[in-house]
Length: 150
Image (cartoon, rainbow, N blue to C red):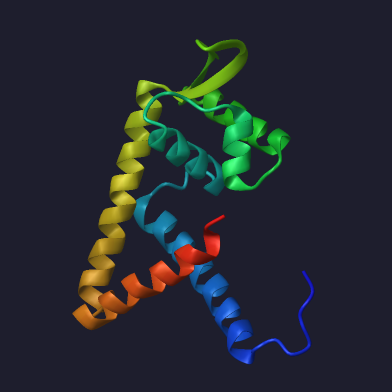
């Protein structure tokens, strides 16, 4: 994506700050909650599978949702399967498709990690921000959410 010569300086500054803060925040959340045994991609895949309601998703579904290549997601799924966190099963509606689903251990670890990350971030927001600042964060997240809507 090329920059327009008349791009708003505030858009460029906002872009840099959002990327920087999100990167730092992700690293802090990982460090604070002890989920270092998952890569970011593995954690994202487990989160997507948690959100699927136990029905499972194909590797292609997961890759598309994360904006990555099928082969890269297949490698991620293989690593999770080696840890006993996901299983592959035939789609009951289409026996040609393989669905990826969490094992009971994968669900437990995924839910535990999600809960720990949420609790850590809520505690940080509670202790380091005023109510007005928390409301500003909520408003800013609504703006950022618009950027990722397709």
